[in-house]
Length: 216
Image (cartoon, rainbow, N blue to C red; front, side, top):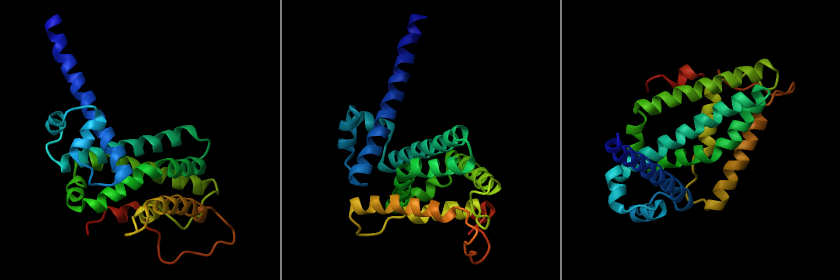
């Protein structure tokens, strides 16, 4: 029995190293952008560069892991908001506020590394998380509309696309201003979705989740 303990410890250490590397990469990318050297990621994670490259043989593999980790966090935030808030509108507002940082990094990564992102979009785990998140958003939108808190001429697809538009980086904008713009944009987005008797009708038909799943 004692002979199996070192193997289990090694696997636990390897998992911890991987998590530390992903967390370090997330933090450094958020602080300094996408061109952080691998050596600095390893130093922040408290591991050697050899360990980093054994876990992630190239930058694309590391970025994919960072992105998937962020998607897991976003889904967890959505689930927690839905479970803990007393109504759908408060859950939706809480999710949008809390998930902004994670969603912003994912959006910026998709712009900085478009080719790597194209592969990640087809990753089974990414697709699974996307389906879960969109289902939660759909429930929250329909619940908030049923409660009379959200305008009825929008769909979950509208919400997903509007969030993506707000998060998309504007070239040349200073970092501090970019962050402030995203925060204000999300707040304005939520205000625009609130039900008002005097609200002007929106043009065209709502964007549905089925619309988002259509092949280009």
